[in-house]
Image (cartoon, rainbow, N blue to C red; front, side):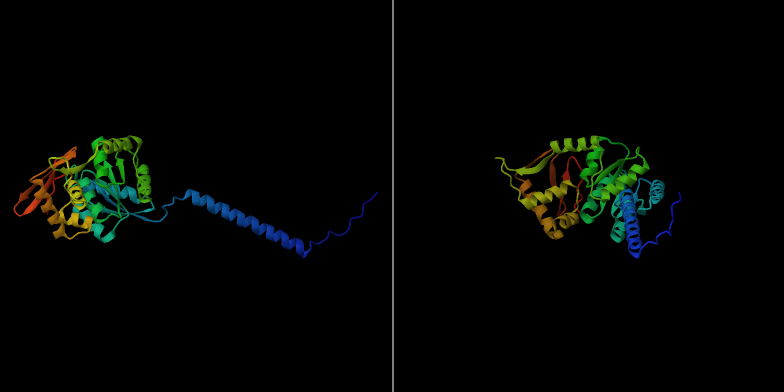
Length: 278
């Protein structure tokens, strides 16, 4: 018994069109799946981040810059002193500044520079390089305005992740370092100026000026921070001095002392930096 075999039916135009549409949809689906996978793998900071690096010595700054240059997401700038950092800040305005806590031969040089940068260039986020995660170093770094602290014992890959996280607006600190901050916050009490009966005698604006003095800002930086003229900032200091002669400051853990040097008031915070009054 033989089965008759006829000619193979040719596909109709309609079925061919359907197969073509199905193949197109499959390719589009694969393309979007691949794109989404790439989007997950590529960091959200895929754009170039301008990073300013300033370590404790010229050689250290060079080595740090060369190491970070290997990351294609970073455009590196380098400085070896506080004046060099401020000069670059004025012209380049980097997104993130990586500063050594020990700068210009001063163990607190990085923190002092961080305070100035916080007032003059608040858009730039600071990462402070620490030799160790000691409590006083961590707290001082964040008090100076740093958005992250990084111990030199950690890996370069971790530093790159730190820079990217800080650039995205996050705070970089481990659980121990955050615990240090919570302890410091619990210990902090605002500076107050009271009379014999315990009544606060400073106005809100005068309190703002005192807070700037505690941070170690100069008259010019106080004026910039509070959006005042430098002359007005000096007048507030004179008023505070006049009140200081009859009342006393109460603060914890330190206190403010204001005295005259020539015709210019000079303030000193006993637990932090000296106020230059320049």
